[in-house]
Length: 103
Image (cartoon, rainbow, N blue to C red; front, top):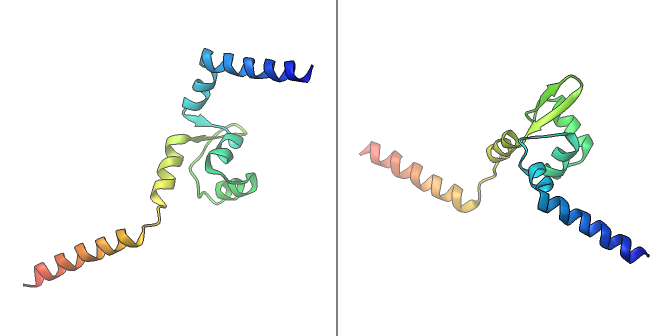
């Protein structure tokens, strides 16, 4: 009996995917608190701290908090840590410019 129930759960999930319900949830521009924690891979307490200290961009409608996926992606991109190769390239470019102007 349990196998039949598992199959029914899978069939229902596939129906949702085929009907576009899952895709519409993925493509929506705003996420709630729980979805944002999952998207960022952080705990709820960490996201609360980020929000309280205005570290992460968010929107508030009444008592509900919403996070725009595009804003979060931009926020993450700004905090990129450069690799050693990128830093070396920047140093080389900077020193070439510096010596170019000195001559």
